[in-house]
Length: 148
Ligand code: SME
Image 1 (tube, helix red, strand yellow):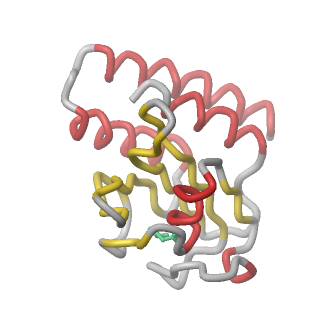
Image 2 (cartoon, rainbow, N blue to C red; image 1 turned 90 degrees about the horizontal axis):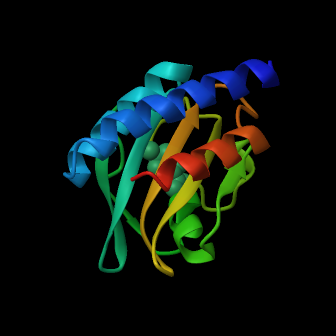
Image 3 (cartoon, protein in one colour; image 1 turned 135 degrees about the horizontal axis):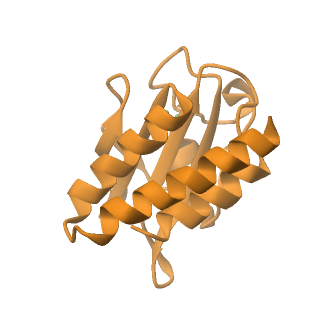
């Protein structure tokens, strides 16, 4: 399973690299990246929140309608922005302050995206199963966001 996931991420990384290398528009690249990740693994929700002032604002995504604004330090996304590191949540019901955009979401990973030292966006992925995300997801998703 883990090996299978590793191979799928290798493939996905190449696809995303191919798509974003020929396009300079950031929104276009975030949109296609969300679609590629989402389809590769069949996640419940895959998307980006962009830092705008003191809030994260919903960006390109795949999946059901989502919360549009998240304050700094709030929920998993706002905490990732504050801590400046990836947060893997095996059970969202155990994460204090988790923001439930969908009651079906069970586990989550949020990866910060950096411009120099500051976070300019986060990649947020939700799963309908518990404990979907592990170190393999963390490593590969952190690698993928450096392409963007
Ligand atoms: N659960 C996230 C909010 C975003 S939605 O999952 C798309 C959080 O706690 O930050």
